[in-house]
Amino acid sequence: MQTLNKLTKRILAICVFALISIVTKAQETTTVVDSSLLDRVNTLEQQANYIKPRESHLMAVGLLTFGYVSNKTTVTYNGSSSVSKTNSIGDADHFEFSPMFLWRHGNKFLMEFEPSFTSGGLGVNWAVASFYATPGLILRGGYLVLPFGSYNKREAAGWINKFASDPEGIPGTSDFGVEAEGGIQAGTTKWSYDFALSNGMQLQPDGTTAFVG
Image (cartoon, rainbow, N blue to C red):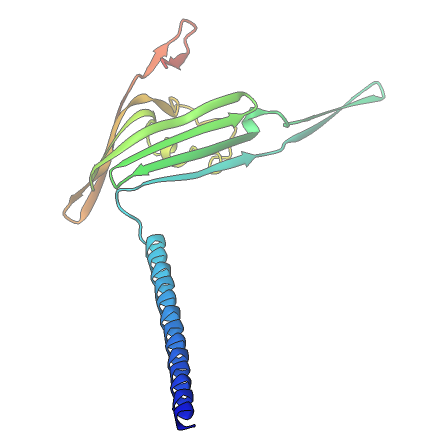
């Protein structure tokens, strides 16, 4: 009888020990899983918040401008009246869609491309590759916006200039060429410069001028 009691106690002790081992192991496994998941979440957060300086980045922006003009003309002759109505729907001067695609590689290279969709068809406003040589010097090449005064680069956009045509005396806005732009710090004064060399314009037989293309 005593032998049976001892055997029963031993079996009970073994079962209790095995149960404690299983519970402890389950807790350790849960802890390891939770720790691994936490590490993965931290890694993903760091990757999302950190932008590597040499990676390429693409951005698409742009503008859509449109206007509407309606005219009504009434002509009375010998007591009879006629009415004519016109509107600007389909007029290329009153709407334009210009998406702009920017592709940057690292901190030195930037490529810009802006097509233009109007009722007159598909055109290109500019397509330029820029190299940021120093903080005070940017080199460009391609179909670039000509730096004639401040109008072409700063005021010619459709959402800024609401007139139907460009001001008189502006020899076009874009042409094929190269450009150097930047700034110079001279004491307390900062000078900006913008030099461009382009194909230029040709004098046509009818007296008008046109870009060489």
